[in-house]
Image 1 (cartoon, rainbow, N blue to C red):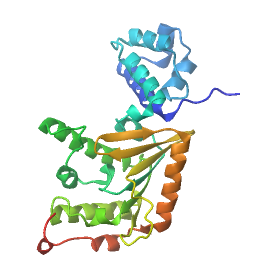
Image 2 (image 1 turned 30 degrees about the vertical axis):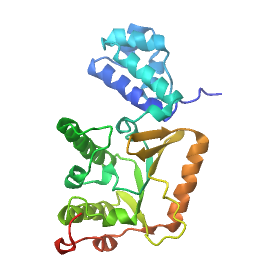
Image 3 (image 1 turned 135 degrees about the vertical axis):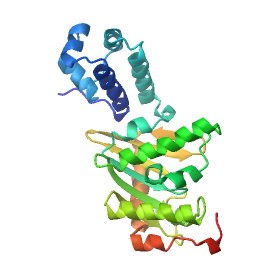
Image 4 (image 1 turned 45 degrees about the vertical axis):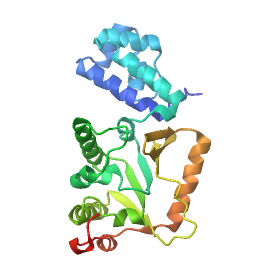
Length: 273
C-alpha cells in the first residue's frame, strides 16, 4: 500500500523548498548528503508527494542557510491543513490547480480583470487603504491573470451573475474595455464563461461567490469570498455542497459569447456607475 499523498495545501511549501534549494545552487544529491535524507525523499517533497519531518526541515534550513524560513513555512502548512479556514493567501496555491471553477455574484474574477477595471475596485478590508498596499493588490491581480490565463494555467470555468456584467465599474469606458477583454479570453478559448440571467427563478447562487480548485491526484479545495477576506474549505461534506451548487448553476446558466457581451456595454449617455 502506497504512502498517502499530502493535500494540495502542501504545494506552496514544496515550491518554496525547491526555490530555496535551487537558489542556493544545491543539487538534490548534495542536499541529501548534507542532511542525511535520501534524494528520493527530497525529490518527492519538492513535488508535494511526501511530507518531511520537522527535524529534516530544520536540517535543510541549516544546510541552505535559510534562517529557518523553511521551518516556518512547514509549520504554516501544517497549521493550514489542520485549520484551512485561516489560509487566505490563495495566490500561492491556485497556480498549482489543474482546474478552477468559480461562481461570481459581485465582480469579474481577479484573474479575468484588465488593469483599469482592477484599479477601479475598492480593495477588501484585508488590504486596507494604504496607497502602497492598494498598488500591491492591483499588481497581484495582474500577476494572477498572467499566470492563470497563460498557456500553463489551469482549466478555467466561470459562471457570473448577469448584474456583474451590467455594472459600469469605473465608468462606461472602463466597463466596455473589460467586456472586450472577456471577449478576447472567450475567443482564445482561455475560459469557459457563462452567466445566470436576472430573471432566473429559484436562483441557486444567491448565498455568495465561491471557487472550487481541483488538483491532479489530490482532494479538491474550495474558497468562499466575503468582505473580510477568503475562507478556505477542505471538508469533504462542505465541498460536496459547493459541487451541488456548481451543477445547479450550470443548469440555469447560459453561454457568454462575444456577441452577447456587446449587449452589456453602456454608453456615456446612459450615465456612469
